Each structure stands twice: as structure tokens, then as C-alpha cells.
Image (cartoon, rainbow, N blue to C red; front, side):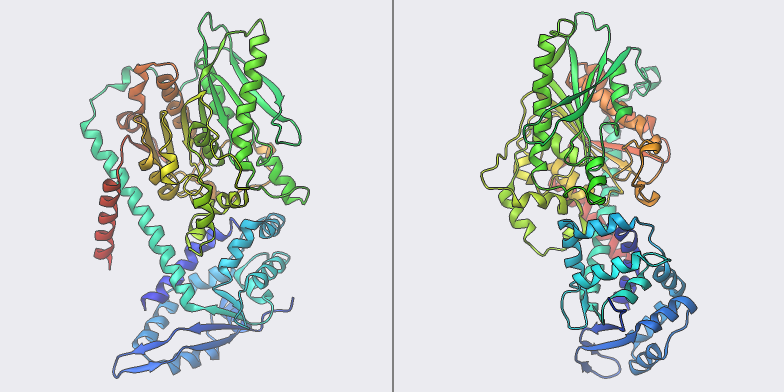
Length: 575
């Protein structure tokens, strides 16, 4: 039966996602079955009913692979073609199901427990609680939180079996809700994957119209430049913060009489001023001054303190404070350098570039001219739409829904004249109308395997909404949300599962270095000779496994619709 095959497949897909979120023992697992309409050999309508299976039977199946008498009883009771197909699926995927029930999710118990107390964690539990209910048919969010907390303390850790055993009382599974969610999950998962593939194909087709260039004769911008530089560590003050913030400044030496172009790098949630040091060092070696502030309200230190119980979670004000961090830092540096006889008049603060990743991508877009759309976001965050499960970044974006109505929604800084945003979160906080206000050159970099800021809603639709004439959409395969973030091993306290990190990020850094360098050479220093490096032909020239990059300079709703239609044709052929 298709629905049950989908349910099993969905559990397999969901399991790695929950690892990132990632009382008395439960007595029974109760499965609420929707009404059945059996048409062969005669028409029989059965009302909705429930299957009650002791948890011990499920545990025995997981440990020994034996179906209990309850399974046998129900399978004999329902001897239709549909149930025979269910039995076939169970037999074929028996081993996979046993492994799924027993698999230990490698997560930090302190982090998981702290996350479940955070608003975003509570929202996920509430939505899952509509499927996993208590025996009294009530939302199971609180019981599920208790079960996960107790399962984490077990010697064999967080497993599905342990969660079932620790669930207080009976656990009622709304099968129809689960089937609906799983069907939607798989459909969105497959649809987004195939749409991205179609867009990559479109980018490949457009290569044919590009002028042929022999890149063998071009300088290799992946290599470090010859300019010597120094790094200074300073502090600055955002009046909205309760303390000063650190920042690193990378300054080139011996610029002569030329104004030095300036680039700001804004890190993402849970990162810090060292997360893009490899990029800052590359840019400064080619003559750019690079400024890297730490956003102390959403940095790695902030999250570590929160998980340790020493700090409050990230709230909506961080969406205001992050752009202001950069505004106040630029103000301080501009005033300081004007009064410094050595650096007076050396740095060009009239045309500043900005790079941002994830939450930093939002920060960059905000400073580039996209006003917040808080009114529309509040409506969206109150909906019961399942997209919150498929797009985890919306849980963070919805933190702004509690901001006071009088809060400023326009955080643009006119000094920012070019922007690169990597895996930005943007769909909820801006929306298509607001992001269209950006009038400077923009490059959006999307990762095909990003489950935190999925490429379709967070990067591709925003790219379509951009009206600026100079825009680029770079699609990276099989990059994840973490492919471009550098992590010093000795500084790691919260290690991510390798499934989430993806291929070795070190292999992706050269792509970031050349794209950023060429983009800012072209749009901050007017070096038109750097434009060919932003072409699909050049990316094809440097592509090297495991990563491949493609680029689109234009994309319309019609192009996306074509991709969706191609997806639909493929899906109909499969079915």
C-alpha cells in the first residue's frame, strides 16, 4: 500500500533531521487508523478504529525481529489486498525498521534538553505532538519532551525504542496525520531536489551562449595575493548591547596613495570572528581591508552559555542588533581612522562590501536595503502550516514576531554597495516585496543539501524577487549549511554530526575565495576584467569533486514553473 510505504520511507528521511534538533514507561502504542473503504471483492465501509500494541511487542520486534501475536491478530483480521501489501512492505523492510528503532542518535543531551526549552524547540514539539498524542487524545508535546529527556539518560542513549518506553502512559499515533505529514515531507523533499537539478540544467544550457574563454591564461584567483598584511583585534560598542563586542581587522600594507576598499564579514548563528578567517586572509592578501565583528547575541559563545544554562536564548532583537553592530562598528572605525595620522584617508568607507552567511546573510541583506516585513511575518508565524517542519530557519525568523510595533524596520546602511550572501535566511523576515528594494549588486550562494535554510524558499525565490540588474545565483552541489564555515578543531565544544557537515569543507573554501574576490574586484574597485570569473564557464573550469558550482544571472517565475513542470512529468513517469 502506497501510504504505508511512504510512512516507512518518511521515518528514514526524518531520522537524521531530528538528530539535529535534535515518568512511567509507556504501556501501549495505539495507532489510530482512518476509515477504510474496501472495494474488493465487495464494498465494505469500516469506521475509524484503533490498534493497541504493547510497547514490549515493538521492543521484541526491534531486538529479535519477531512479530508479536498482536501483529498477527490484526493482520489476520484485515485480510484485504491493502493489508497484504502492508505485510509485504514490512517483510521487505523488516531489517531497516529494526535498525531504525534501535539506532542511537548521536546528540549532546545538554544541547537537546536546552533546545526543547527554547521557543523554537517548543514549537517543533507542539507540531509533532499533533501526531504523537497521549492516550487521552491530547497533544503529546509535553509527554514527548519528557520521553526524550528520559531516553537521553539511558545507557544506550536516544533511540526510538527508548522514547517509546519512556513516554508517559499510552502513546496514540494519529496515523492519518503521520501519513499526511510524511507524504508532504517526501513530496517537498523530492520536489525541491528535482527543481534544483532542473535549475542546474538550465545553468548548464546557458553556458552554450557564453563567449568561449581560455582560462588557462588567466591569473588563478584561488591563490593568495602578494600583499603583506596585519591583523588587529579591537572592541566596539553597540549601545543596544550590555557589553562591548570583539572584532578583527585585517589591514593590507603599502597601499601607496590608493584608497583601500573595505569588506565586512558577518558570521552566522553559533559562529564567531574566526569562522571565515580563511576568506578574510585571502581578501586582504589581494588588497582589501576586511572587518569581522562578532555578534555577541548569537555567537558560538552565546549558544554555549545558553546550553550550559548561563544565558537566555536568542530573541527577536538580535535581528535588529546584528545590522546595528556593523553600523556602529563602521562609525567607530571611520572616526578612529580619520584621526589616525597613519591611516587617515586610507580606507574607503564610501563603498563597502559585505559578506554574510546564514543569519549573517540576513544581516547583509538588511544592510543592503531590504526592510523587515514584520506585519506579514506575524501572520505567517501564527499559521499551522507544516512548512515550519520543513524549513527550520522559519523558527528563528519567527522570533521577530514579538518585536514591538514601533521598532525600526529599515536598517539599510548606504555605505554598503555590494553584497554576497551565503545560505541566507530571508523568506519570512523580508518577503518578495521587501527584498525587491535592494538596488546594489548581490550574489546569493545556495547549498543543495541545506536542511536549515532550504534553497528553494530561502535563496531561489528571493533571487527571483531581486530587481537589481547585477545579481548572481550560485548553486553548490552537494554543499550543506556548514560547507563554507571554518572550525578550529581545538575550539570545537559542540561537534556536529558528519551527515550534517557534508563533504570536507576545506575543499569548498577555494570556491568561496575566488567568488568573493572576483565579485568585489568587479563591484567595489571596478575591475571589469574580473567579471569572467563570475561566469558559468569559469566555475565549470575549476569544478572539482566532490563540489560542483553553477551560476544563473537571471531567473523568472516562468523559469521556475518550467522546472516544476519538468518535475511533475518525472513524478508522473515514476508513478
